[in-house]
Amino acid sequence: MTPRSAFISPALSEYVLAHTEPPDEVMADLIAKTAGLPEVSMQIAPDQAAFMALLARSVNARRAIEIGTFTGLSALAVARALPEDGSLLCCDINAEWTAIGRRYWERAGVSARIALRIGPAADTLAELPEEPTYDFAFVDADKTGYAGYVEALHPRMQTNGLVLLDNTLRSGRVLGGSETTADDESVIALNDALIADDRWETVLLPIADGLTLLRKR
Image (cartoon, rainbow, N blue to C red; front, top):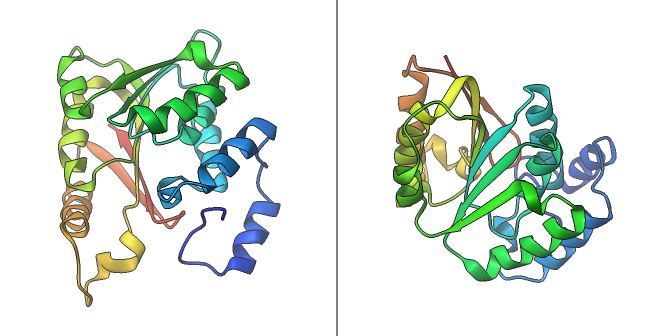
């Protein structure tokens, strides 16, 4: 099953995919491989991968960081958008899932651009120099950790650097009126905090399950 936004119909999702840069053979094979996993819902949608690659190219991203890699589709999309001397640091806690990604990064010829750190992302971030380094970041990990990741990323992002936060609509539960989880409540609180935080220019887009774009002022 191809991941898609819960906010549009299957037919409209197919239309979106038909009018978006399609996955090539390597990316399509990675999507198919991940489809056999019970955790397939953790994979970003193909249209989101294409959008992220377009964004990275548009801002001429050279150094990128990702928190939450899963089987590597987002990393593949971003790494391909970087120049030959670009680099992407991937942070994840699961060696089994990321091992799948490694194989496809190799097939795509971008493995030399990607460094993978296995361990808690908060620890990895704390070990990085607290100076502007990255111009593109993607966060798709434990939702209760999002606020901490945003804080840790801020001093490490270049001015005008972009931070993308995934799943910020929580299948509509951000509106309340239904039972929410700790993940939901954390994202709701963060959404409210970010729009009031003048360090960031903030746009929440209804892409997939909600994709927040932050530009460091």
